[in-house]
Image (cartoon, rainbow, N blue to C red; front, top):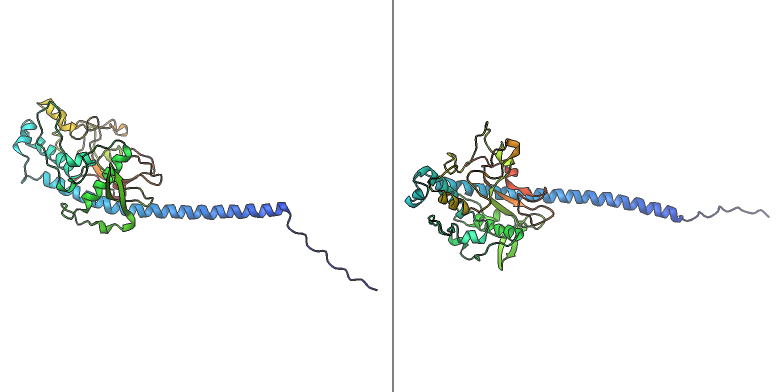
Length: 313
């Protein structure tokens, strides 16, 4: 009788082969996940930048309107402000522009409620009344960088959303609802604009960086010439007849931070002081670290870089 030879059954995967297959699949999955993550990160950054361009343009528009109005020859500073500035009308006008910018663009609730606090023991600078828009805010000073950022974010929303804001056609509806939200800071809950990572978009009234001290943000200059779009005649610089008045004027904008003579010397420009102070909206970026731009990390996103604005009124 003839026997039929059957082929031997195929052996199953060995453990090593199975582990190799699993490893390959895991590597492919990691590449796919990484690619998806990179695409998602790029999309979130793009969405944030699109939102911030709208906010930066609106902020710059209102800033220019306030500065132009305050510097108008048809609306001179009061006689008290002129007397405070040693009787120099041009110095008084430059200071008047700075004071009005602080009043219209406060960064903290305390600034919003009291734009020109008096300095103890110094004759009073004419007080500028607070805007009624800010009356509902608590009169508190931020205790840390996160509170400062969040207070400024609430104020940015109020400033840009107010229908009667000078020179503004901006509406909060111009920014999608997905880029808006709320934060609670110092017991007050307010609306804010948000970036794609869920962090509040804040703003800096007088941004001072080495970058802003050079073109395209500042007109090209030679030697030690300095540029201040708010005080083009450099009337606030140098010696005042009444030194205490100059010190008080500087203290209104933040003791230890703001001087009319110089701030943050720029070593890349031969040590020239940085005079170009500009407003910018700011996002802390993906890490949402709570830093107060522009002193934060490299992932911070600043509005003036997106619009390339900042070189003058």
